[in-house]
Image (cartoon, rainbow, N blue to C red; front, side):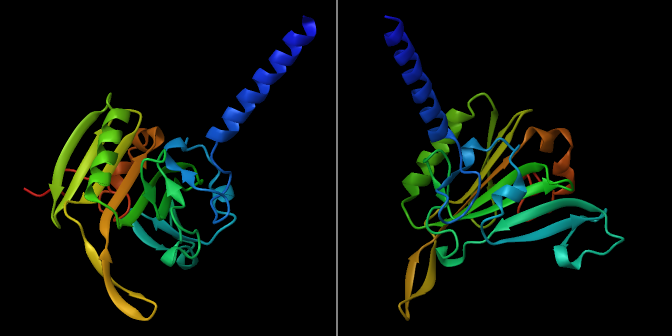
Length: 235
């Protein structure tokens, strides 16, 4: 009887460990590291580890005017406020297809992570020029509504025929921007020009630290990390 109990207990431990590993994100972001689940980001990740196995270019926001520049252009007199880590994936050659997902509800090809001057993660921006159906974007919006049902929801329009969905609480800000219609772009495939679907969608998620430290004010005009407000919306 004792042996059966011990075996049963050991099996439970193995199952628990297996479930934990299945839920855990990769320690790094790279082509062979598996798709990185943005929904599981804790904002306590080590940005140096995440960026250590792939191509990342880094910009910095400095001084009272919040100027953005390349890290190589930093001057001794500059006061560093934020860093941006841009995870490159041009033509899907560096990180492959669908390197970032959101609980497998939607996939993204590009990622920028925002940190403070000491590399504490404040938030991220995930982008895709989507070649699928608009209904898939609508389904993702519905998923985010359910996931953030306890947060205040706002829907606004921006110039360029864009919709801005926002879920705002004291703990987290989620912002999704998407084209209202299927977009297209011209690409060269096997030496021939062709028109393909290319619908813009961008997801920003900001941490509790971002909110508590009033970072939003400093980034109001930032292309990547502005939390949109009435100044941005179409009237």
